[in-house]
Amino acid sequence: MLKTLTNVNVWVHDQDEALAFYTEKLGMEVRDDVTVPELGNFRWLTVGLPGQDVALALMAVPGPPVFDQETRDQITALMAKGAAGGLFFSTDDVKSTYEELKKRGVEFQQEPTEQPYGIDAGFRDPSGNQARMMQPR
Image 1: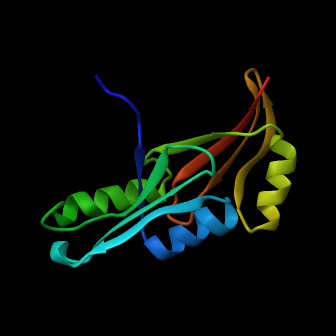
Image 2 (image 1 turned 30 degrees about the horizontal axis):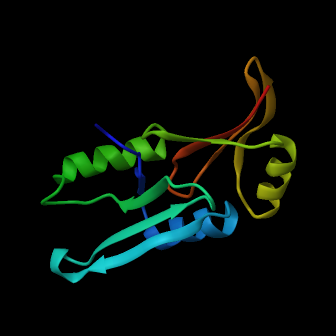
């Protein structure tokens, strides 16, 4: 049987830029940052929220031989549209978290909005990935 979810893949254009965003702006911590020369300098980079076991694997979109160029271009195009997946965070106070993150330079696509399930707000990372934060009712 499966035991725990450990990592969730997030495609990024630039791992250093993503690392700065997720740590400096969102307050995550680095879990792993390992470069493997034997695999063409593949970089395994993960970050996570303090006190939480699940980490985000900030993965550069690979080209050949992993993905052919057409597939790589399709993933990159989906990222630009914000359609390559999404992250959902919870918070005890969406409005104060929204103000704090805005001060850190996070650009929001949706301000805190009352929804049937609570209050939520939406933003994107520098690679275009959608993220939402929600305060449950």
